[in-house]
Amino acid sequence: MGVEDEYEGGPDQLAEKMENLDEVLAEQRAEALRAGLEDFDLDEDDAALLAGLASGEGAIEFLPALPVVAIVGRPNVGKSALVNRILGRREAVVEDTPGVTRDRVTYKAEWLDRRFSLVDTGGWEPDAKGIDRSVAAQAEVAIDLADVVLFVVDATVGATSTDEHVVKLLRKSRKPVFLIANKVDDARQEPEATALWNLGLGEPHPVSAIHGRGVADLLDELMKVLPEVSAVAKYEIGGPRRVAILGRPNVGKSSLLNKAAGEERVVVNELAGTTRDPVDEVVELGGKLWTLVDTAGIRRRVHLSQGADFYASLRTSTALEKSEVAVVVLDVSQPISVQDLNIIDLVLESGRALVLAFNKWDRLNDDDMENQDRRRYLEREIEQDLAHVAWAPRVNISARTGRHLDKLVPALEQALESWDTRIPTGKFNAFLSELVAEHPHPLRGGKQPRILFGTQAATRPPTFVLFTTGFLDPGYRRFIQRRLREIYGFEGSPIVLNMRIREKRQR
Image (tube, rainbow, N blue to C red; front, top):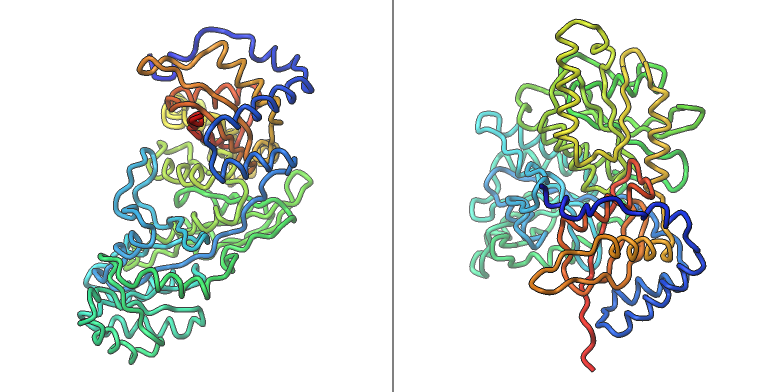
């Protein structure tokens, strides 16, 4: 019996009750519950959220793409230490969250109430042989995809020929570059940083990534030149809905794009990872215009074999920033891989809507034994490996022949509609009270946490906030999410459920 099963509690009348709900009455009840929160200790955030409800504000708007800051430099100059210091947590090296990929390249960071994406190229350390070429390639990638570049040099070593090689590229790029003199642990080492003026990148910023010295000053300066919205991952308000086509190399992303666009737009080659530049393409599908954000990987030059995965992962993150819904393409002739699951994890983390496209389906239609076996295994893999995204619409296609491509459109429309869905506060609280009445939260230490009030704080993705008197078990939260889906659909959209545990005011 799984953790969630203890909340099953047999059949209930929830669906019928919600269907026959008196909405006016439900709103009045929700208003009474909200008023009851006055007896609890609320903070400014709570007050702002509840004030938004009172004034009937609409959904929080979809956020524009965050500006991108990339960190480049030779191996061992302290790039990852700087990433961790800026994030304020040891995230670049360790990840405690289960199911989140550990080979991350982009992180969300914040300074002075401004959010930005931080790109860590430290995860892609070149081998000693082609070090100049590799570090230069790394810098090129970063320049390509960043709004601002932080170039890290080890001040105790001084500038090497590799560093000078990279400086040439950075100066040509016309992008804002900060020269970071790392490992300046105290004032005695300041002169070593000053010596880096001769690189011609302007004033060196002396920092100690390990001890945090000088990092706050650096970030203050960075905020002065960082754009509000990324120039790299632009977000157009309005216009055709934006779709990212994701998948590991050779699953058929480019073929799908070509078929949709009706012509050979992207160079397709049998070699994995042959496409290099993302091509945004406005195409007509199902009588509507869509913007397809292509995210092909990098041209795999031999010496870049290490960097290719890094590059593909970076492209994926950038494309997700630009898109509203992601189509993850899976190759049915191959077992579902860790890489496939990592890509799905990135989509979940980005909060975008999701459609799963099972490509090369035509290959499974022959009736020979091998294909029958593969079909059987595939069903089992989907049940086991993709259970956590069972809510995503599935479409079986053949990108090469264009078969069933038309089925992609209803799936995209459904996912986006779910992503935009808002449940009125009255309805949501009626749903919660009926659910809790039928399936109460189990006692924990002799106490039972109560849900005081719930509201949908945002759409894109639908984000709910529960005010509670205690911690709700993760299993119970999943149960609430599952019942929400069963009654309101939400096919194709992640649902976020946040808790705010509040205590009664002391009289």
